[in-house]
Length: 155
Image 1: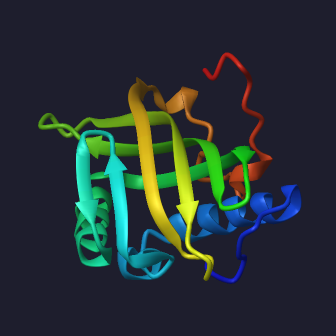
Image 2: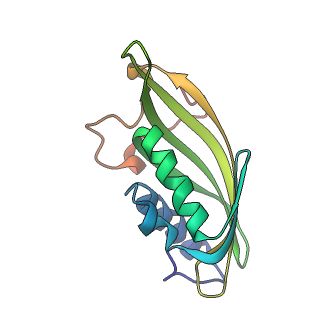
């Protein structure tokens, strides 16, 4: 993600968002953490962390819980070294009665970048909504998250 550096244009901001989307969809915490500065500052919902070691641990726990994780990010706004995105991702957990419960997370992130293109600050606000198998957008036969039509209604 560091190959695209600020100041951003509409084209490079969109590229940065899609690179981040593809990176996060690898669900590889160590690889994802490389896109952030060593002293990166994160707020993820109600959790706060600093540095790539804390980010890596957070992502390991996240993807242990969030099975079947698939993410889409959309460019919302940008300035010279900042990008705002809206995102949607789906995941499931196995409930105690062995039922698979799907969720969709809706949210917004704001990102601030260092001169080298790595992310220096990330703030995320999101809400998980239980969904049924039929309501899923990113089903197994969807090859590309960007091909899914997302309406304003969302469900």
